[in-house]
Length: 326
Image 1 (cartoon, rainbow, N blue to C red):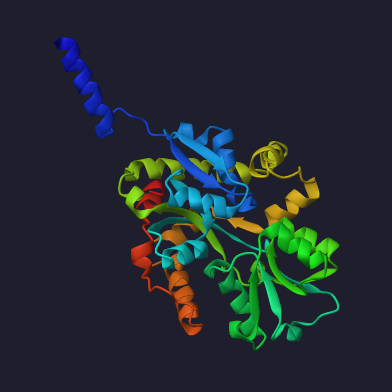
Image 2: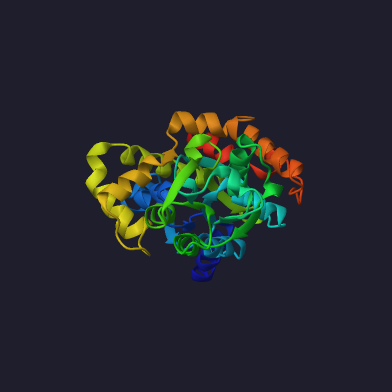
């Protein structure tokens, strides 16, 4: 009788979540700005803060999106504008933190013989047609007295886009590193603008399915953010460069060939991964991310691309990141 009673208690504890350490799966893709996930995993920073995390490296973003949508992972790291796009496609998503942004890693590349004015009425190859990249492209077009409606966007995956630019099938593309580096070098291209031209235009961060988020204790997410913060501190220490290179080539870019020191340094310089001060500034109540979301919504509305209205307070939950930063 005692044995039966003890077994029943164990079953109740497991299903109530008490005494059960859940392993959280975080999805990531080959992008330098997502590398703190791999560092936190490799260096044990999540375990240090009591979080059990498994990093799942996907070869491309679409695979990661599907894994999040169908609950094969719990958290995904992407451009926040992509999460806006999926939300407008009726995927129930909630952003839980901005963690950094592209700062030169996304590029508008044109053939050296071409001029920006020649873009009007032409096909523009683009690796992502969600608000993430369209917001960046729209800024460049507006600065050159053009609108999105003045060009035709053709979406293509990163490497294929670089291949087609090199083969002269596109005269104008929007791509990101490392594929953008190859397009520029081998395709006789010149960079006319990058995400560094408009600081903060392509922020990146975590999102969770809204229904899944309701089941995750806030304290667990705070522990995950604390591990991330430790990883960022470690990355910013120049003494760790040799080990960081190894993590980048064996983990972050594990599905690609190893990159040279020069390429890795160039990619690191092309992102801004937030320190604690910047995390607080961007993620605070009605802070910079809140303002960015409203600006994106305005851009979509002006270009007749707002398929579904959204309010920042409805698609962004900053409670866990605030707890981690206390």
